[in-house]
Image (cartoon, rainbow, N blue to C red; front, side, top):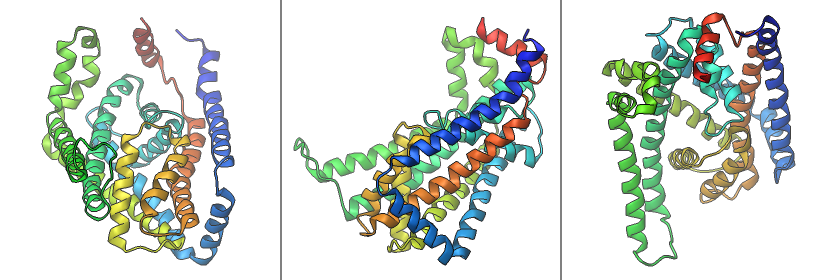
Amino acid sequence: MLSKSTKIILNYVFGIGLFAWLSYSIYHQLRYKDNLQLSVHQLKQSIHTHQTAIIIVFAMMFLNWSIEAWKWRILIRPLEKISFRKSFYAILSGVSFSVNTPNHIGEYGGRVLYLKGENRLPAISATFVGSISQFITTVIFGSIGVVYFISHFGLNFRNRLLQDYLWNLLIFIFVLATAALVIFLYFRLSLIVSLFERIEWLRRFKKYVVIMADFPRPTLLKVILLSMLRYVVFSAQYLILLEVMGVEMLWWQGFAMIFLLYLVMAMIPSITIADLGIRGEAGLYFFGLLSANKIGIIAGTLGVWLINLVIPAIFGSLLLLGIKVLNGNKTAVVLNKQQV
């Protein structure tokens, strides 16, 4: 059993520490970026001259995370019924946890803190279902970007074992096969649960993942439709910010490149707080094929990063100040069992 003083430290000092670390990470990330001063200057100018568009982008940020909160609330409903506000707070806290972890994995821990102790571990599996739905969406829309890129620009390979068009075809087939496989597994989550039955060292965790097999298809379909709606929202945000920053391109070309960019980002392991550089380089490459406005591209990418990730993460870390990391003996029991 944990002492009362230890619980106080975990419950209140943890949020302060996370906020401090997040602030330092953002500062360190921004400090060493090339063209940062010019990009920030471009961002400031655009805020003053395109106030309506910036307000719309901020409103879409709330819509983006509201859709995610709605989706998560649906997924954990079999475990625990919570209010939309509580779900929204959980999402923001999850963002704050994810910024210093590879591929947003920390968001699972941030979200489940808002649930009862006995529901936290099973809720991780339910949250994973939502992540699968978002990944499926990314691959489906990303395949549109791949088709556009290959048909208009193609890829040039130095390896001449195959002709370039065959390499391009193989890449497209790989993306489609990945989408088909993930969709198949998404609607057959019982197959994943069965692995926990067959593999001996995983059996003790089966009770935490069995919820994945209990979601009916209508619920899974609703979740993936919400994922698609959310994807369209934050893709439109990106396009609006690029337009505001003076990056000229046809809207459908912009969407195609954004879809491709998000697919590339999903395939590259990275830490959220450190992926601004990756986003910037990828954005410069893909959008640079459509526009020569490099400063605008970097400024747009910086704006999306700040609005959709950094600002929600800051709010999420502040919300953690009022959350009890350990909310009762049941949580302590679960943690002790996992340590044995």
